[in-house]
Image (cartoon, rainbow, N blue to C red; front, side, top):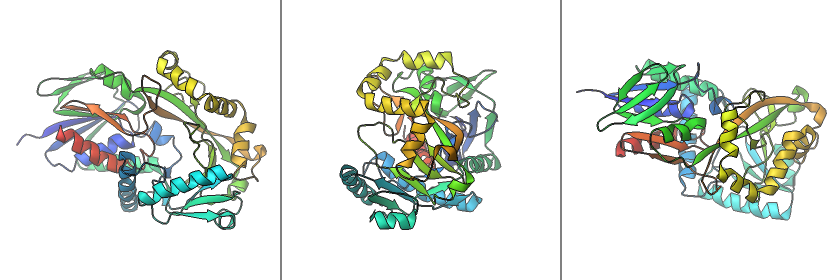
Length: 397
């Protein structure tokens, strides 16, 4: 019996999780195309490392379902592979009566989603869990964890190649074209023919989808998120994750304080329009990406509806003092002298023509091509569960 040939475009954590899931079918030959010289070079390697428990998501949504399934799969996988993982816990801290009411709503969602051990705590218990944090009330999630996502991604890659799969690094896919019985994958140097293609192209997902005949929407608008790092001395003030209560007036969460698997503590991220989809070093804007974003009418519709958010994020982008002051609301002992500039991440924010944000996973395509158009947070947490879902969807088609 002839083996089915399947290509996966994208060597981030979701693309590799999909490839590994495909390898479970012994009649499938898998090739992963990754344009960078290593796996996990983009969003996977530039995030906070948080394993989300599923506090915020609408019960019954794909996000909620895949998050809870993904956490269990992730824990099992990293334990088997010896990847660094820690259940450090998380508190979502309220200061006002309005925030406390929103906290109750989050608690109801978390309980409905089956998040283990989640509960509302008062100021005294906040200080027991995080002695240097301040707030009137908090939601405590003891099962929220941190992990080494780059190491997890390398472990996924090892599984794929150990099972006979191929990962072609340094090979950018320039287009995919569906034929009646196959799909042609074009790269900068050659073409190849596959039975199916699953594209997990992250920051370039909309462009690749459009080249294969799909809609231009939702469009990827990149938002950078800067982090600051606490000094080693002040890092000892933080035991886990300290988050603000999400405010419905703002599309992004705002600055929070997070322990990482390496033992460092980050402040951030903020969220501001990036002048390049892959401009992690802050000094290399892309003219093409900038024009693409600011020339998109949907972006200006989004901005017009979110002026308070734009003002807040502009202040944090321009002023380290303002950035640190946001974190000081939750950990007052932090000062501007205690921080140094850390890494930058870039969020592949899927945005519709009317300026609305896609908040859940978006999977599109045809009988032979599947495009993952949006895989927002908790994408990394949910990666192994997302892979199950995507592969089922691909073969259902």
